[in-house]
Image (cartoon, rainbow over all chains, first blue to last red; front, side, top):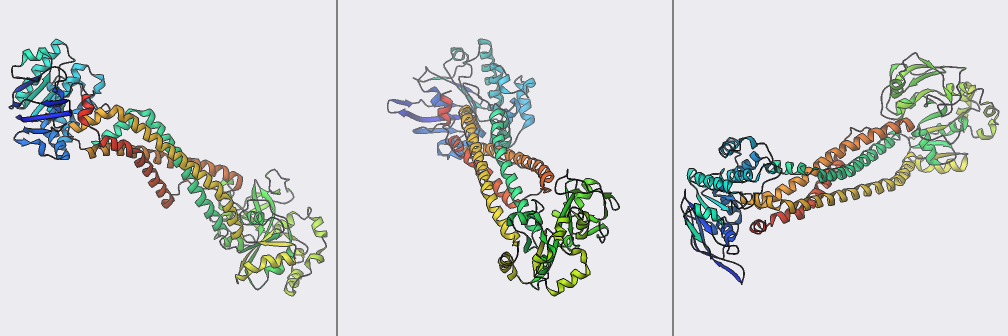
Length: 209
Length: 418
């Protein structure tokens, strides 16, 4: 469960964002839409604790993350927030499996190898365990990102344009997958997008203007 | 996992890694060789001169006299009259005086005419067989025994002079009667006989010497000396090369060189002073090499810095990613520092090994040329420890700026610019 109250943010005096309040319970999907320059990514970064808002609160599972120190926030983020980014970045020197395990280790200190294998298998990546991320297709990379975001069973999954680089078929597959997994893992799923295919797919939408 | 990440990253871009390692390796290798060489050289030199206060020999370069008679490195300065030398050897100041006479060599190993005391002076003893007692009996050093496969009872012909290719003395053969224990000093590479053997071997060559007007140089004979001369008439007019002197009264070290220079045609040189002079000369060269090596180390430090700094640009997404997943800033810092330290440790390790391999080759050729061998397996813990710390320090220094940049990385900005 994630909710926000009266969040404002400004890069400089001419671009000031005042974001509407968001509330997304666990197991549900919430879509944040809006054209470019409306602060979609900024909002997502604030939700993920990558940026601090100028005012307002981000509350994840009744914890106000704005009160955390930098180090505590890093730790909290690792444990409770899964991020699926617009572009898929990986640790290039690590295999697919190690990339997923690293996420677990950084958050909890456990390598969770079996769990990572199961999760990857679940996402149809069983044969890719020992490949380098660069050897995978874009669609496969996207699924590895999702596996990485879910390995710690976070309270919130934040996805930034998860479908922008995918074709129709794959876009719907990813959307289905995200929704299914968020229900399965009981996480609140927040998707930031301007993709009209997703706008048709999800009903719970908040539009930034 | 952070260590593993650093390790994988090190080898993910192997070219720049290898360049950095090679540079570090070279500088560490050079410095290691210098450290070992200097230490073992000084050790060999001072241990060989341990018990020798002065060397009495023919006039000429004092350094040459010391090098030839104590270290068996140079050609002798010339010969001195045995009878004259004896007057000094029997001086009450003197605790022990060992005469040396050079003549022949066997396959490049010097045959040294001396007294049994010589072996004892270097801490050696006859391990197999017995000490030489008669003319043409020899005791051979342990190195020679193993290198030339000589055994007690073997015989060989010597060649005249220092060079292997010298004229062979085929009229008389030397007989090995004993093999000395290993001392780690020059004795290991010497063939020892009594002085009579050297004289006897050169009887025919030394006619001119015998015709030498004996009285002129020998007028300082003491009474005791004359008695001995009567007993061993064959010593009359004979020459030796040098005398190693140890004083009972250390005043002799100070007084004798001038006394001898003023009163005789001989000279007395102090090994300690001469070797000190030699090391001072050497030292300049060694220092220069050492500076060069540290220069190379500096360059390798810069190379590591550039390698880390360049990959930082490519890897900032990776770092942002690590932060997103809960890695602390300190862990990013750690990754970079570990990467640098991994490079430095590998460079140091290979450098130490390479340095020792190089020393092995140096030792092989110096052994052939000067009969001086170095031990590549020795560890000079203190100096090499310092070298290791310097290497690590270079690594930390090279990692400093990239690590700070990673530490300060703005995740949000990095990801938005993607």
